[in-house]
Image (cartoon, rainbow, N blue to C red; front, top):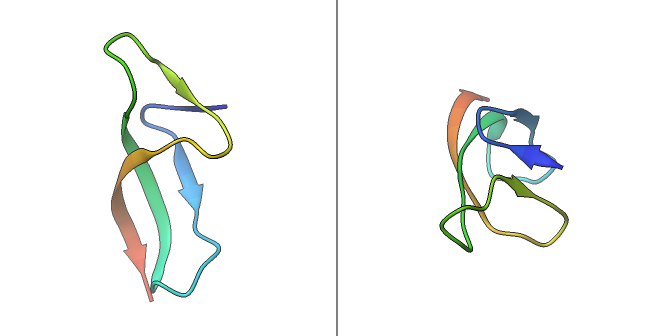
Length: 47
């Protein structure tokens, strides 16, 4: 599960290396995200 403030390593070719989850979309009280859920992130480290 992914919670807010979780640091993640990116596995695509976008140029971002590490991101941090800012918000989990899909409900007002939703606190965690799973596979296939949409989250908003901030890039912390890029190539």
